[in-house]
Image (cartoon, rainbow, N blue to C red; front, side, top):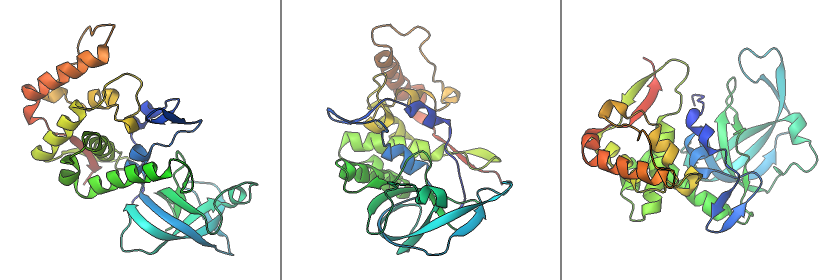
Length: 274
């Protein structure tokens, strides 16, 4: 698996809380839509063993010293994204982190793992921005559902974007835009998604919640939709949106643009440079 990095769109999700209805998880909110889209692999599974021997490897090719890792063997229950036809994955933790008191990743534990590819070995590492989610946690079922929704959208965008539920369409669009705009290495170029898919993505974003301050994982799409570099297709920010409801006015303008100049707009994707 090629190591990739999340694009700047992730910067807009540093919000104080992640809500399901009126309930809030704090202090570190999980963002299953965004982190599924920006992880190399996402699985649910059970830790079945901890390998006796540690593995020493450089954390990146230019690292001056090797890091010692403890390796967890995870039996895969659901291959949500990035892996297929596999029953187990090997997840590495720095040894000093593994032996830290209270470290939760122990045999028989069941987790939702957001994983990144180790740059110098075949090992997978927990995403540094989002720790594994204990499946016994209160909101784990919903976090897994949203992760699976994005994983399915990446595999089959058109089906996900035609979901009956509006919120699911919006979250699929958020996940796809985030996935497409990841940096494909230092040397990358721009490609364009098909016209029919682009239309569905933009229509889903247009019907999302543009309220200022809502996270993307709640379907809030204000910053994402306005940061997609659609100016080539005639989109323009409102020069002076009203103070009472600027997001609402931008949303109305976006819908109007989408029905006119934006009807042929294409969603951009970053791909490795050939």
